[in-house]
Amino acid sequence: MKIVGIDLAGVEKNPTGFCFLDEKMVIKTSLLFKDEEILKEIEKIKPDVVAIDAPLALPKGRKSLYKRDKIHFRECDKELLKMKIKFFPITLGPMRKLTERGIKLKKILESKKIKTIETYPGAIQDILKIPRKSKGKEKLMAG
Image 1 (tube, rainbow, N blue to C red):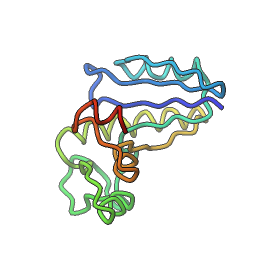
Image 2: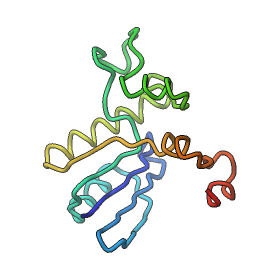
Image 3: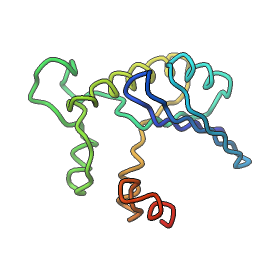
Image 4: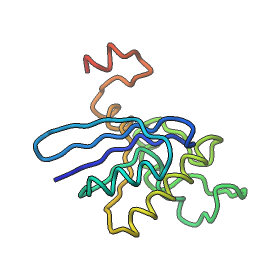
């Protein structure tokens, strides 16, 4: 199985973390910037799944990120709230650009029949009680 993980930046001028893992546990990491670079790398690898650390959908009933609306949370966001896991809502400032970019990439990948899922590593860290990077790199590395 081949898996690609992407820590997507909100805008192309900032680096996006890109990681490839295969069934032999070979890992390749890089920093990419433009969507076309990301897509080219994915097409070259032909992964079974692409996991993107970015929102990949709008809340049910919401049509736009930019028009004012009373709907701010997706069902998965509501579950995180119940678990007291912190996250940035997709309608918050820079999250709009990240969400827009994530949705665009997901549509392109799915049109090429590449399975694409949303991931939120911060939530897993909280659930497993692994410190986040903001608590210090040493604590993160120690687990």
